[in-house]
Amino acid sequence: MSATVGEFRPPARLLLGPGPSEVHPRVLRAMSAPLLGHLDPAFIAMMEEVKALLRMVFGTANDLTIPISGTGSAGMEACLVNLLEPGDAFVVGVNGVFGTRMAEVAERAGARVVRVEAPWGQIIRAEQIEAALENCERPKLVALVHAETSTGAWQPLADAARLARAHGALFLVDCVTSLGGVPVDVDATGIDAAYSGTQKCLSCPPGLSPVTFGPRAVEVLTRRKTRVQSWYLDLSLLAKYWGEERVYHHTAPISMNYALREALRLVDEEGLPARYKRHALHHRALAAGLGAMGLSLASQEGHRLPMLNAVAVPDGVAEDKVRICLLERHGIEIGAGLGPMKGKVWRIGLMGESSRRASVLLVLSALEQALQAQGRALAAGAGLAAAAGVYES
Ligand SMILES: Cc1ncc(COP(=O)(O)O)c(C=O)c1O
Image 1 (cartoon, rainbow, N blue to C red):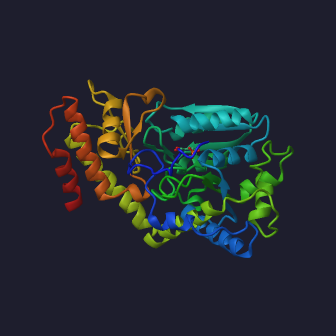
Image 2: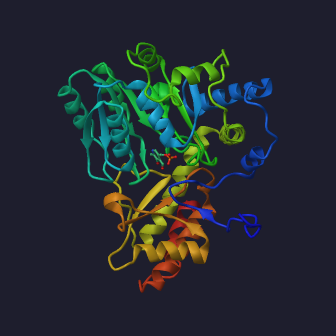
Image 3: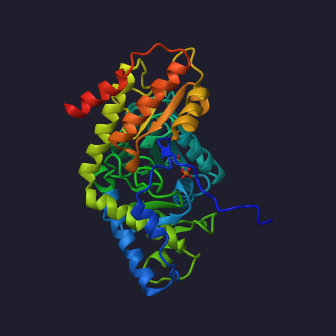
């Protein structure tokens, strides 16, 4: 490579897509601190703080609460390959990209996968889960995606937790997008295992996947008949590094752990109830603004996530042109639709640091201009006025 490759200077962007979200300068600063060795006593002390802060945000007393090295999908895979053995029955809600992904990972692990499906944008109903469990021989694990980032649907968990337990199965939750934005409350909800990601409502760069395993899940790990198919994600090995033994497994991503610790400290300083309230407020303001511009949300009414807003693209509007206009003219990233929603929705994320009044007002005004450029007749400032109304009420 020649010296013509210069320093990389990312263009200024406001990240309002499905993740990563904006990152607080304190988190970026923490990442640039000098490295420690992964067995240095100072790093080990820091690991304990990360675990304690993760327990706080998950709402759990689970001892086995650690960040997996890798993005959210690594946490997903870690949970599935550790809890399932070949031939085990796995009941999974599939109503978007991430339930689909869980089913695929479990199939690769040799599980018997029972898909409980709902149209994209809708939630999985408790009766569907009950019926699947009743028709399933010895269900081992039930899993749902709490915040389906591909559709904006907010999945209720309590009934599924109860049903899983009544049928002798464990309950696993994907809270990649929900953690830190809406209550997850692992222990109070009756969740046996959960995984998340750093780059959504925790507002940390992508790179770690917090997981938590409760006592019933740990018991399943210890009673396995077969070895976990993935050496890298084998929780019994990882627990020896993150637990008291401190046995080397793989080199921990040092700077990412600094970043996560700082991001979690910010969550703690704000307080979870205030953080949830903030996410709800900015979602309400955005939804009011979109409504005043004649735009509607595509996910099921009453089950809409505050941090991920799937906006239906109006007829006659080129979805990609609007998105590209926002990026190139306004420096704002929003997401495109995936799968059956490709070309039909924009996904506006208001996650963590991105969930701010300024984000809402900027994206509404940029959308107004982009839609007008497509020939849509819009009353100037109507979206902004409606959003301002929510803030002033
Ligand atoms: C709900 C959900 N689950 C899992 C993932 C996978 O996470 P990652 O892309 O960090 O591997 C994502 C990523 O967007 C997600 O939104």
